[in-house]
Image 1 (cartoon, chains in turn brown, green):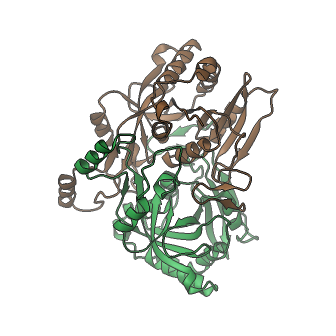
Image 2 (spheres, chains in turn red, cyan):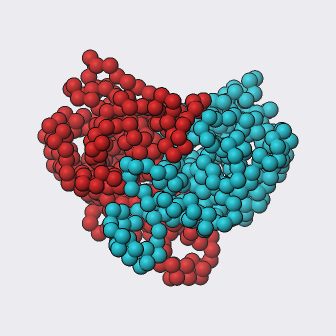
Image 3 (cartoon, rainbow over the protein chains, first blue to last red):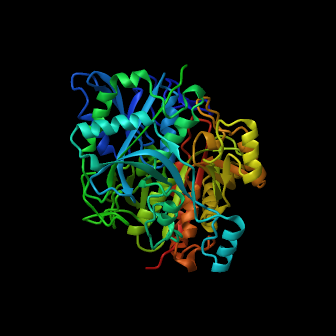
Length: 296
Length: 296
């Protein structure tokens, strides 16, 4: 906060730090694992090579970046907080200071409405956004609400189309999970819904607020009859921004760089190990991966 | 992350901590100042009464809660990170563990597109959301994009209707700012736009992503011809949730509790002092306030 930033369009400090994640070129690897929970980031830290220097920096905006090596390969672990906006901050600011291919895997716990059981691992192949319709006539009478829905064809929540993660990375993750001994039946692949609230737009009921979300889970299942497995708050933005990358020839979600093929196994093993972490809260583990390529 | 949580609908730990902001009843006051920058939270901390115990707790999800007294009146300062979702987490979880009237004032720096100059103070009377339309046909040719816009009447960005902060608190803040010596011309009141990205939906240009945002600022001015002063990322959710409060008789944004009238001066003086903090980056200071009342 006391630093002076330059360029209101894309603020950086005098020494090249992007303003919210608080790091500069060279302090972050192009293979990245993101988490929302800072304690989970520290669990990953323990898996890094102990004979190599480890960089750590927490920004004033809540981002924690840890960079080191895993079996000799540079990797970063970044705690980014929660919500589509925090993922947006992270992906854009990281992209501005990383050269070449950028691979991001998000690991976390999530709610689930599909066939998984607590303790299973969900790989999110694709994700759509569930966002609240702020123009919905809250606290109006039934007639006004009905009239609004008929005239505008709008509901209390919006659901976007689906964007996909990198298919080959998802498949590699699956393969490694099975190889590590997790039963096939406990590795679930399916769609994810990224919701703009942990409460209203994930169908939770909060008596203190009028959320019009009683039929929400059913609406999600109706719009996407293929299995929607997980509900969380960040994956959609990761896949969406991978798709928005201006490096047009590489936007396809089915391409994976040679670089990844070469050392994908190590990287994915890292995810795999940390996936074994269990949580008391009734949640499923979930993994999402996106890659985009920019040739500079 | 290692704690066991109960009740998937509204998770709390065994000792009553709400799961993301990580605090329990009694650890937070019902008068709250929120900030996005953790260093700013620590600046406020210095203004608290030094002869009273100060509670501090940082959650694993990036929330920092500081509770103490200001001239004998309990007050909390909470660093909540950035984005509409982080504000949603905070307001709902705080509401679940605070009894009675809850008054929240958000203080931060912001971009500005109105008549203010850097260093001025903006009081956001009302706020609307600017959110990206994820269904917009990115990377399609001109014909497809035109066709989409004609058929759906949709643009790359959505703008919600306006929700208002508490009018009397806004007026009290203005009065106190002027009393403290800030020239009348430097205290600006107007509308705020809360955007779901610091970059795309605030009109910044990022060559790494296709954002379709070249005409965005002009579209904002067209939809809201009254002065839109500030662009930031949280205010809208604060005002919106105040409006969504199920305590119907008190939802009006023009009511202020007697409690506030009695000691509003002290509270607002706190904001005022910290507002004097200047930042090198080309931003305006901005304040937003919301109150909702729940009689339990």
